[in-house]
Amino acid sequence: MILTRYVFSETLRSFLLAFGGLSSVIFIAVTLAQLHKVQGVSLALLLQIFPSLVPEVLLITIPASLLLAVTFTIGRLAADNELNAMRANGVHLFRVLAPGLLLGALLSLACAWLYEFGVPAALYSRRNILGRALEGLTASAGSAVRQVRLGKTFIRFKDFRDGAMIETDIFLVDPMGSKESIRAREARLVLDEENARLILDLKDAMVTYHSNGRGRDVQSDLMFDQLTRDIDVSDRFAKGRRLHDMPPGDLWEAMHGRMTTRYGNRALWTEFHRRISWSAAPLFFAIAAGPLAMLLRRGGRVAALAAVVLPVFAAYFPLAIGGQRLADQQVVPPWAGVWAADAVLAAAGALTFRRFVRL
Image (cartoon, rainbow, N blue to C red):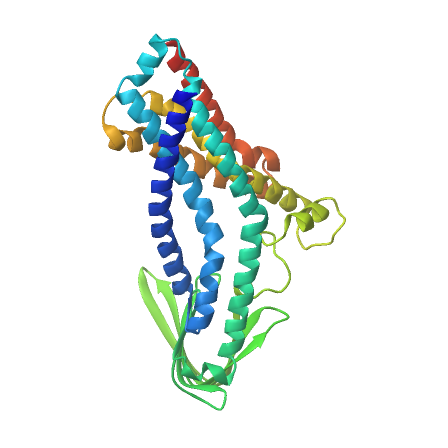
């Protein structure tokens, strides 16, 4: 138990240090990405958005921090030949892996709560907040705003008068990738809540269409006395629950046909398995990283990053994302596509540990 407590305390300390550093960096990056998507909203609404980013940041930093902690702790024991000393004294090396597995199981439970309750509530709350921001942009309260960014749509104007934007410049990119620049004498925003669309009603507009011809930008200009453009804001306006927003109770009812949704049964089962699989990532990271770190002999943390952390990341995320897409496309069953990454990590960890014990 002395050895187990020692390894557990070292792993926990490394985890807390990595968790603090990664959380700070990733939260700043996610916040900047969110601000880039939506510009022109009030500071009060932006401050309301920040708490909704925390659950998603934690789901990134918790597994990554545990992977670093397990790798560095066991890698240091291997580099200092302490693992060989333990084997020479008859200590089974599973005692070294047990603290990381225990910590991984506890963190997986925390991630399960985040996936089932924290993230759905955060996503739904953020879409409601951004929906209220769009409502504010269509009212006189938006008079203090001079530029707005909604995804790939950018709106800039010089003045706001009688509910209209004066001398407006607009840059639009449609789902097919076509681009157009619009300069209008007057523009009004109307929010269609039912269809989650933002309607631009333009007067005296000059439209410049951009298209690629023989590797160069080809432009054509047209004039319109009246022009209307629609902007899809369904990802920023909450009108009913989406698949990733659904609480676990609603998801379970929909999966068994006791609640009507717009999603098919296969998509519901894929989402169900996805939440459980990604919640278990800390545990499977510990299963894979511990035995791999036992093979380290020299190089310190740089070698640990190159030999353990990066290969685990390179194997897990492409398999997890690709497997989910294959399940969505009905190429493989939902459980097979979603759990493929975890199965690969578990197999790699088991085979590596068995090989190391036999050395």
